[in-house]
Amino acid sequence: MERQFIDISMHLENEVVSDPPGYGPQIEYLNHQDTAESIIQFFPGLKKEDLPAGEGWAIEWIKLMTHNGTHLDAPYHFHSTMDQGSRAITIDEVPLEWCFNPGVKLDFRNKPDGYVVTAEDVEKELSRIKHRLQPMEIVLVNTAAGEAYGTDHYVSTGCGMGREATLYLLEQGVKVTGTDAWSWDAPFVHTQSKFEESGDAGLIWEGHRAGMVHAYCHLEKLHNLESLPPDGFTVSCFPTKIRGASAGWTRAVAIIEN
Image 1: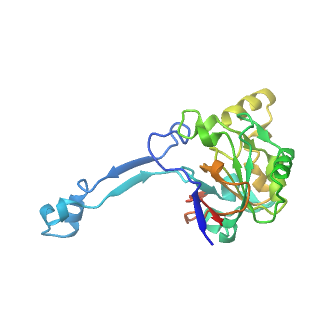
Image 2: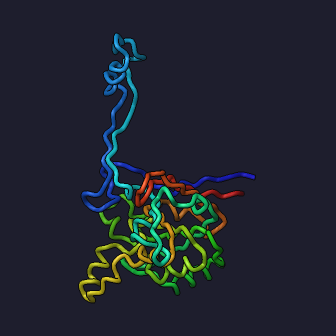
Image 3: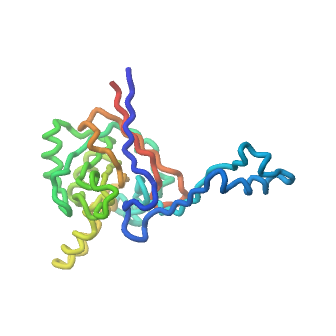
């Protein structure tokens, strides 16, 4: 049996639009010449010329938000409660059993930017790919945002998953979902105009807030989902263990057994 690994994570990098202004990562790269003096400080009497080619170590200082790059959101991110009143768990409390399961890909790249996916849309897509959802499957949503990554309009591109669609998945036993867009919900710029017209605050973050009813996690800022088949793969998305945090970075990978 041959195992194929497909990277579905994006890079953490400078100067690529992956977040709104002011929310992106900041990475300072220090090369081998930059750090030689740092090594010398650990070893009194050591001289730079004693080091191989006078080189130290390569390191990076990174300023990150837990929601930069490909990450897994914990129920605590969505609200202080989950499962209709229980304390919402943080990322270090997410069961590892949730994070390694068969995957399903729903292709909504044809939906317009700002569109809010419904339960009916999900049912139609599952029918199209001839897949019946099973408990614990990880459902990934391929949107138009995937191909817009790195462009100035990435954070405003793609559709979002509405409350109705999210609850539809959760009520069938799904615990982890994911999207290649900046957010599980529709881009804020589109929701903003709808809120201004209606005054309905329930439109804001409606997919996320579904976690108040049924606990779940979702992956955001996935990448390369267009390379995946509709099903027949396993998703690995174990998050970094940050105590009491709302999310953790993950090197999300799809695994296909041939």
